[in-house]
Length: 569
Image 1 (cartoon, rainbow, N blue to C red):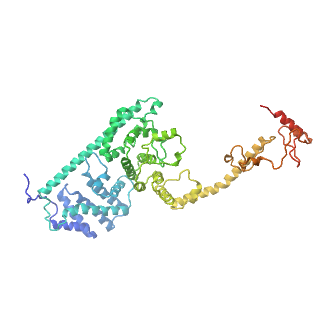
Image 2 (cartoon, rainbow, N blue to C red; image 1 turned 45 degrees about the vertical axis):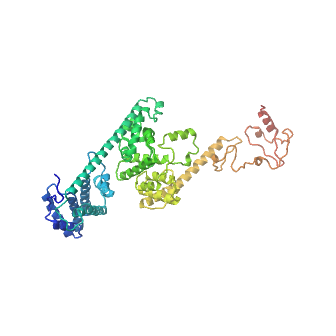
Image 3 (cartoon, helix red, strand yellow; image 1 turned 180 degrees about the vertical axis):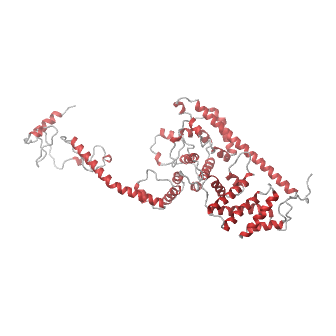
């Protein structure tokens, strides 16, 4: 039987009347410690009357206000206060988001976002639970923000904004029907979301089974090189996934980024013969080739600008969440997939000398081939907002490929500040000169620079002396080997790799430079000879005799030796 509009539904409450409620609310948000302590005591009395049915918001407010009372009274030290604040904040996040959880556990950040709770408050809860404790400053800030949220979302709504409204009356029959209808709609929506999540997982698991079966069916390496081409039997499955992506692309990407899919497990890597130790450096992550080809048919089928935008946004958002966790394996693959997508859109000049075969092989392992107009400003902000060990590499890819690039000086400063923030070491390509010329920003960088200069100064003298000794020994050995030969060792330090074959340093391209300044033509037999002064000139390999100033003279022994060595073809 439907209730009449005038009939009111009454509830049993723990407070005496509306005046007591107003008084407790006013004292809770007062700056007077004595008034706050009184309000906390009254709520303790309410809890005893409520037993186990005390409102969650009232309990959380009392816990947080009790932290402020202890803080302002000076009874506890800094570390003790951090623990007290941490317990209250963890209890708040857990209790408020508990009713939002369904049968399948969902991330607290998503649930808190639905309730308009700041995400950094959930991150504080994560720090208290899993990582290093935050500072007292952040604890106080979190307590203040949460109390403001409770006042706006719970206490103010209980008042209804009308001072003389009957406190005991909560809602009439029509309001109750509206509330019940809204709850029913929420349950239906939650059930549809759970079913869609299960469908996405089932589709991706079916895809993995098909790919692993095709991999097991290939026995030879020659056949496995063609494994990236999907079988014809998978066309229906890829079509189902594509249709699901058109309806719930965001949910599909969320499932793809879970462990066991785009982030492989150790068992999956072992099945594909991918050695985890052969991964690229965390500072420049790349997906293993076989694992990339495992997912290429699916990613190429989903290739669309809107999907690529959403995929990159989810990747950077996941990197931001992982910046506070110690999951290096997951952070590596999330960064590597981000790098793969950005490299697909990169058209650097380093590929201009490759052959058609090399280009075809490179394009075969790309998620998409044609360039996409990405939202570079959003990607740049998302990249800087997700600091990790691979952020400098990803930031470099974004800066190099922007449609409207930033000034060179700005890019260099961004990369340098990013390296300092992420505490990444210098790459091997950076020279010692660059290290000494970099400005000093921290005490660690000053110490590193000082130690580098000291090592360089200590090793310069010994290295130069040892290098000179080795150089002199090498010259002496070469001169000994060429003794008695018309060849001589060049003592000048010439970079011979820069001199073309058949030329000497400083020689011009004009052939006339090889001609003598003054010369006359004559046959060899008509050339005047000079009598040999010693028998040493007939020794093969001996140095030539001295010439007169009248011109180039040939001895009879030279002519005979030339004739004996001449060969006619």
